[in-house]
Image (cartoon, rainbow, N blue to C red):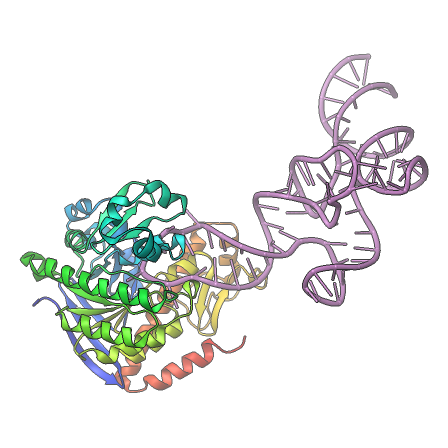
Length: 408
RNA sequence: GCGUCGAUGGCGGAGUGGUCAAUCGCAACAGGCUGUAAACCUGUCGGACAUAGUCCUACGAAGGUUCGAAUCCUUCUCGGCGCA
């Protein structure tokens, strides 16, 4: 992997600033990767992303496989070319969808695997009608995952090998091994089982990648660790993934409050088990406070849908916390969207105007808020990086947290 | 002028004797959103205390029938349509 390199420039405690080199350019870490699930960061053009300071964009294997199909993307010359983005790209493996699509039926995934269906028969027994009647779109077995498309209901199957094959076609600079993301609420036994399965899938993903000489020259593969909220599982998962020979490490899990108690702190503790030279990607970590906590623990890259999602729905990040621009008090507020942090491309818009756009469902409102939030997050990470280089990250983080979570 | 149909909470529009402070949609307001099945979801939505709940004011206006009316009757006001 000559084309891929990670260099640490400065450290402060476990926090570090560095540079990741990829065939499509450099990523200065800590870095935030806006999420363009379907090869599009919702509402924001590649040129704007560039102007906001983004250096890398993350897309999703599951979505691009279903639509338009990885061959189309490959035919365009790869993900970056396809979407008109001139920098590095990352693809997620589809492992998260194993969780988010399966979660439609609560804990059915574990039930299905452990009780209703014998492992070896899970696939053949898959009953689309039964599954969909429960709103469940994915069923896991040890070999892989069978799922129905959320677009047209058609039946598909991912295995680690298939995920890697698709990601080779998509051609991102960095891609992830196929994993099983679990809900933090799953019990120990299931977390352990899923983690061990993820480890086996990681080895298979890595093997499938190393067998492709051509892809190895252009793409780096990161292995994802799991373990839920259990410290011992987290640590053993980190060690197992670290020993396999991946180019980088993916901090897996779902830290959304929606799916249960957040286990970010315990997940971050696992990073102590990793060799210092290994770049770490915090999957789906994107709330300002979580980003800073993660940076402090040694995470180098982040990706998160929050910036664009909450923006699209009319909420924006400010140094004093999130504000909902649809609030009554902003209807005649002719001040800047965020007086303390005006983001490039949003300079001319007032809160009253943006509030009106969101109220009247004009798409520009969602675009402006998304621009602001992505810019805000990129700035946060950029400032954190500079703070590490200057040796004042601790103070920077403390200051930010005090302002952001102060009562307002 | 005569006939006819209608008048319901910010708007649209259900309800046509008790289970109606009144279905539903929109708007409004509040909250949520962390590897995007998300330009989405949840809650509130006459008023006052405010958890349950209790009380008050309410279905154009006034009167009446009835144990009980948004619902039935009378008159009036306003509006649509038809005929003059």
